[in-house]
Image: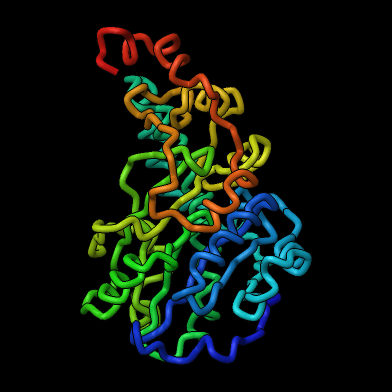
Amino acid sequence: MRVNHSKHKNSRKKSKNLGGVILSTFLFSDPEEIDLLAIKIETEKYLVKEWIVVEGRYTFRGKPRNLILRELLNNDPRFNEYRDRIHILECDENFFESFKHSKKTLLLKFFELSIRKIFNIHYTSTRRTFQESRFFHVEKCTRDFATSKILELSVTDEDWILISDVDEILNTEDTEIRKSLSSVIQSRDLFVMLKRQRFIFDFDNFDSQLRFTPLVNISLIRSGGSKISEFRLRSDGVPKVNLPYLVEYCFCMSLDAIIRKLTTFSHIGTTRDFVEFAMKVNGTFLMPDSDLSEISWLERIDISDLQVPSYVKKNFSKLKTSNVSSEYRKNRPELFPGIFGKDTGR
């Protein structure tokens, strides 16, 4: 393990507004995520005091990869002002190799899958979910690798941890959101789920599905009762939905980078053809065995009046991917006539 031990002298001072500080922890794995990281730092800097980034030497599938983040940061002037607040944790352990299902689990799953295959009851999706369980174990362990550094940086039980991904940005530059966050943190709730608005494939391509990112009081981590990774899966936090506290830019990168992500992250990804098809009709991509009802239809919108980071608005022409077909409205009724036909009202 190699850790950037640099400290920011003022970052650990107690904030009078919040009663503590916010620490932001997330994972990093692809060179094209560097623009997302720049957005994240520039937008979270108003309330977040330290960023704890974990980069693994192995993918979630157990494949070796090069550590790239430290060099990317050192060569990018956008991070000059923040380098002493960004803590890079380089994880050398291959959690994939160290994980094994018990014989009992394997036997029970074998019988379950056999029955599902015989009766054609969600066999493929169930089998895929079981395969993914090992990958998600690796993701959890990688997230939890940040625990010791977080506890080192936190000096009071009034501190908070934002447990996010690099593409999930806490919009602390927005005055209304900042004021609301102050109230949230000063409440008695120790685990809250902050609403985030999601954009897929491009920075103005909106997904209306409701999503949340956990914000957790450090005392819940310090007590040892729950791990950092567990809060990404839990749904028992207090939901905060009155504002879009976070903006998520999911797969807002080149097509090649999207395919790289799909072949390395926890979910077993779909094929390049399915991704390109999703961009053609502007919908979330499907697995080959998915039902059409699982598609989330996306819409390109004007971000000028939304609570999105000013960095994105200012640099939109440079950031935009133009992945989505400009004729997706025309393509939808041609490819999905039963949903977007003349008599459907859509």
